[in-house]
Amino acid sequence: MSRPTLEVADIVRASGNRFWEHYGSHFAWQHRKVLDAIVRCRTAALGAHRDQCTRCGHLAISYNSCRNRHCPRCQGNARSRWLAKRRAELLPVSYFHIVFTLPHELSALALQNKRLLYDLLFRASAATLLELAGDPKHLGADIGFLGVLHTWGQNLHHHPHIHYVVPAGGLAPDGSRWIPSSRRFFLSVAALSRVFRGKFAAGLKQLFLQHKLQFHGSLQSLAKPRRFRQFLRQLFHQEWVVYAKPPFGGPEHVLNYLARYTHRVAISNHRLVAFQNDRVSFRWKDYAHGGKQKIMTVSADEFLRRFLVHVLPRGLVRIRHFGLFANRRRGDMLSRCRDLLSAHCANEPDAPTHWRCPICCGPMLVVERMTSSQLCFRSGLILPDPQRRSLDSS
Image 1 (cartoon, rainbow, N blue to C red):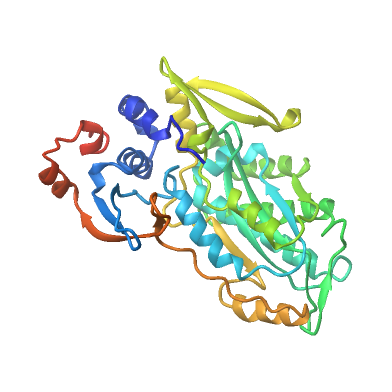
Image 2: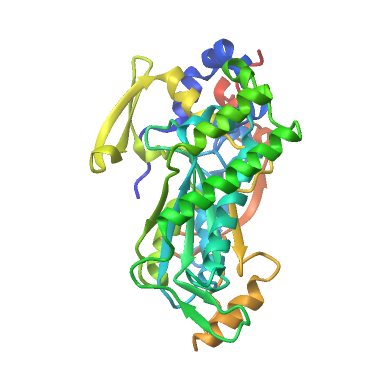
């Protein structure tokens, strides 16, 4: 894929200072840190490294990446490495795609309690899958699956949901055999919705009783027990959206799917169309009208506001494994499943940590690392303000 002509970093450099002066008081320090990282990513401000081809000796100097997980530039290599590790863990069965979405009425509360409610979203949805799959009335098996948290929709509005990739079946309770699921569906969507709603509401009530939730601005009235109980009742009077897609097919289909959802940020640079007159245009799919691709134009301030809404709390894990594939038991359980499925998959090699030579396609290895000061000294370069430092201190 060719390099995009417009990047989020260009918008931050042009409008980031003014945006932070006007709206910085509404955001936390980690939001500022994300903007700083995006501005500095792959510029001389972070130093550089010299690579040399092991075949033809070609030399190249590259600026270092910021490695911030919200930076649109930094996710490609991390995604490739992660997928290489997951490749050996796929089972030779079909996979289902299941999505749990929080109702719009919970969006504001989730924004004020990101760490608590995103974690609850994971716990409630995963427990729902494990409980219903283990019920003999449904599948009657122990299952394992992978979940990826997303907090955005195509228009960058807040839309918290979790994508799960689930093998079409599981182990019998005694571990003696593999129980395949129906080819048409995995579990009842109606049952998933009801159980998910009940578990999330119960968890939300527990957080309230433990005085862990924060209520600011228009949500201050929810701090009152009577008003909060009324709020929970209103949530129970609506259907919660759970989406279940038919099987992908084999493991390769799953890998292609995972590549789209594991290390994505709110928007990729390739979706940006134009940045003119302090307005940003980007492509989006309108799923309410058949997934038709459209162009949306917003002010630079609104674009940055929407982007920063999706900055995750520090340390929050957005890719998690559950059930048979939980971290502590994944290796043993995968071996057991493969034995029962009579399939022994060879371990895939790790993704290479080097890039390819543009001359002969040989591996490029790092032979020297240089700091920003060393770059300036060697080239006599005086860095422009956006590259020399982060956003101006306010």
